[in-house]
Length: 409
Picture (cartoon, rainbow, N blue to C red):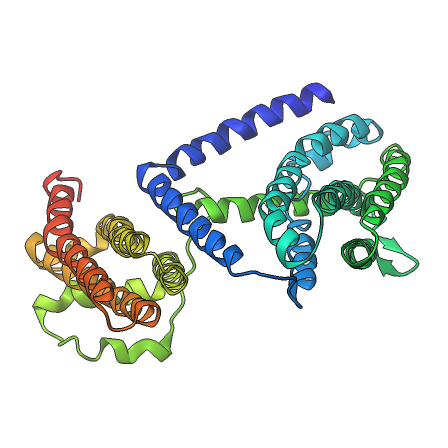
């Protein structure tokens, strides 16, 4: 069983690294560094405004720690044929699941440690907790997370109910109560209760796994759902087999297409506009980046960081629109339209400029909210407009022409 786990884990990691290499490209890393820097700068300024313990300081700490404990599921790497070919090995799966458990604890433990470390300055100044309190609570959360993962293994064996109540619900209620007691009165409660819950569930876990009553269909369905969520995240950045973007009609947005005149020169403009609105991948990516940009610009009061965020995010949205042109060109049926390549490029450029203009207007409102009507806000807005014009009328047409000149489409 250990060899089976090692073989599957190796295949799984090779597959994951393939997508991670595509995600963490130069543009993503640059945007991520700027985002982390901007959030760090805002967090530092926010901490500087706290002079005494806040009324909502402790509830905020409890909520954040509760949410971070929900991160991470057990990765069993089970496959559809297992229910048939490995059925005879059912009672030997304890070693397999033990290896899966040990692998699955890395991500949630790292998340708890990192969030607790980042939260500690706020917890110290805004919630009145000491460094010892934060460390004890964090260690207790690790034990609670291990108990949650054991609970997921109980579910695979059909033991997720305790006295008619869902085990995960019981653990969450116990976690909330423990966090309240630990944050407000006795921080050792998190460590003690977490350790007791984990040890008791760990002992019960071995007994259940060795009973040989695995619910194969439920376990495989849970693993497929977990992998689908992972692939759906990867699909935001690159094409992932088996994860297709959903298409929605969105009839309520039909008014957006009224200004497009029904003439031959607008054939592809209408096609591109319709596809952009209906395709969840591209309109979703545009909305996420625009909302993140607007929130950052509304929170950051540093001129230079705001300038970088404004220019970078407009460039990123324009850069992320390029694959959409390629997706449409790969559709063989579009070649039936008697439209020249230059008209296709012009129509896509019009759509790109329009989309970037919407983003620019929203970001300008956020900038005006933060800086008011001032020279700084004017400089940032003009810089964003300059990037918009560069991407829309210089960068984008040349990139699209390269696509068509390759002769693939």
